[in-house]
Length: 267
Ligand SMILES: NC(=O)c1ccc[n+]([C@@H]2O[C@H](COP(=O)([O-])OP(=O)(O)OC[C@H]3O[C@@H](n4cnc5c(N)ncnc54)[C@H](O)[C@@H]3O)[C@@H](O)[C@H]2O)c1
Image (tube, rainbow, N blue to C red):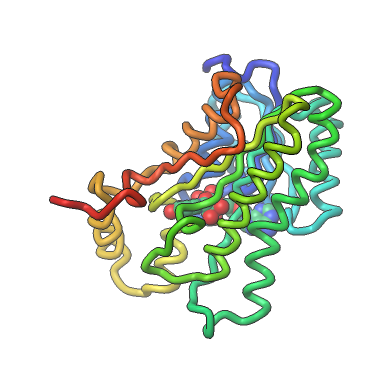
């Protein structure tokens, strides 16, 4: 156990994972706890949050599972109330929830568009709206939003709604950073590239239906570094941005993608 977050409290949304294994949110929650933070594990699947708690318990960390759908304002308010009730403060808000409904513009129904924007983007507005008054009172806080490189470029699996929601997160992060800079609160976005997580395995199994390992090899081959990233890569970046080591870093984006947005693989 480290102590970079000793005495601090973090809310991690989407702290479970959609399938067996470790996703970006679960990895971040585990690393925050490993560094001494008390972590509110928020997920709309209580079972998924409880599984993350079990892993944190095994390492002697401190966490509490909490069920909430972060696209709903009253549930975000309840989430923050629970954090204050249990831990008395909130130092880190880590917005990790995200869904992707594949499809080009004509294939995307209005319902799917609305749902994607609500779950991926409106949720960040709502969690921040309810958390910021506490951070302002404390005079300190760090917000980390998990966007995607899809917010700055297209990817082979088209999803206009997903890309638009992730681009919106980047703009919203900037707005929050500037509005709250003088109040000691920082906000940054992480743009993961192709990470191998349960989220990706579930989407590929649904969309591809064939040999998922073959699809994984194709994804690896697209990345200049030669392989997809791990959820721990995203979580370590989050740990830095949420920590005091990043005290002068705010309003920016950190791309974690093995050079995928920089160019194609050359050998
Ligand atoms: N894996 C990748 O290649 C990749 C790339 C870029 C960005 N991302 C982003 O990373 C984030 C997710 O990563 P992950 O691996 O942890 O995914 P995951 O799907 O495994 O975990 C997300 C968790 O969020 C929960 N969730 C979904 N909707 C919710 C809601 N409305 N309210 C509360 N909880 C909800 C799910 O139950 C799940 O446990 C997403 O924002 C995704 O867009 C992933």
